[in-house]
Image 1: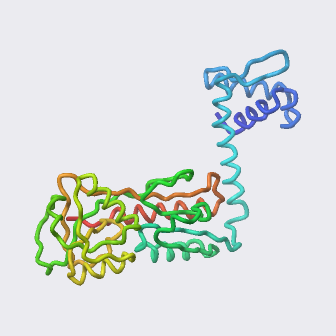
Image 2: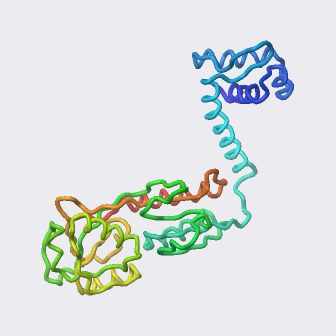
Image 3: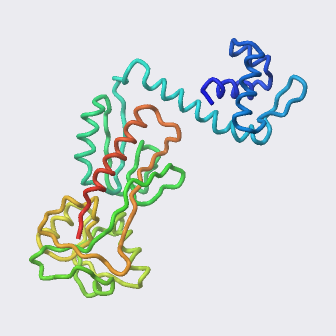
Length: 291
């Protein structure tokens, strides 16, 4: 099977005629007929119902057409994207990070180095009242309805504290945190939502002594030895080594992070940025915190 066969198939399907297709393709009718027959032989199935000179896609042909047409359009976009070399025109890309804000320096540095023509606009934290479709990409822990959601990492969320805090465990049952004074993010934060959902399922109410809407503030309070908190193993892996970790047991607390986008058909630069973001998350996944 080759590209010409697929292109001939699409043109014949659209025109429902070998004659019309041959005129569009600037090849002889026998050549078009032979190509379609070769394709059907290779697939071992008929793609058209023939009535006189008219060809109409049958059930198998319609199914095959849906895949072939999309594939050829995608190929054309790829060819156009690389023709004449990379586009040097300044291109705006907007990125919302509801989670994983510690990755921002790495993301910005990589984009600046590899895509100097991209003007990157960043927004952070939770903006549920806004239209997500205004962003090219959203990093979130909740799949967004109506958008394409690609899981880019899965991380365990540990219990963590300063080694001088006076708490020493490797495994912690959820019920054991009932009497502890905790440091946490505010209720509208996606990480806090994940944590609350985990404990609510177990009918456990946590007592937060300190709450902040900025993850950096929470990390600072943990490092200062103020109390216990929850530490995502990948997205918070830059937390200081003097922090001790414990695993919630018997059911570890975990979350999945997604790269979401409203774009069904990405431009060349959007696809490149998407691939770069996925590679960044994969790299961080490999260096997650361990107990």
